[in-house]
Image (cartoon, rainbow, N blue to C red; front, side):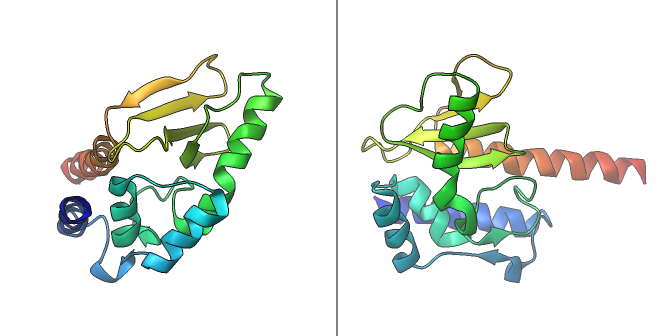
Amino acid sequence: MIAGFENTAENAKKRIISSNIALPDEVKGCTEEEIKKLEIVLNVQLPLAYKAFLKVMGHGAGRLMRDADVFLDVLKGLTKEASEILADEEMPPLPDRAFVLAMRNGEQFLFFICDGEDDPEIFYFMECNDSFEKKYSSFWDFLDDEIRHIEMVDLAKSKLI
């Protein structure tokens, strides 16, 4: 099954490059060893879809999600930071086996549950909200939305020129 997700990740990489979101040398993946080490350090079994993403672009992808903490260099601390945010806000804790995959400005984050699903639902939290919101049906829906957002902004800018 990982091969199918790797194809999806490779297709996303091609789209990012063809949309000029990143140059080919800006899309940098993680090694299998780095992914395994992340799983060991955080004591999680990451979903196959997410592992495929990390393998293809886990170290960066040009302008993709440049405004958020999402790449390997910061992933180890995001779940802990999100837990601290929730505690400071006197909110219920993250669900068991939650993995925070993205954080923006220390006030909003996205997470999935490491429960054996290959392509998990993505949940969202923002400080001013009082609950978690199911934001995407799958990791790939999330990634597609991020790519589409940049494509739409670029298109709008090109029409202004």
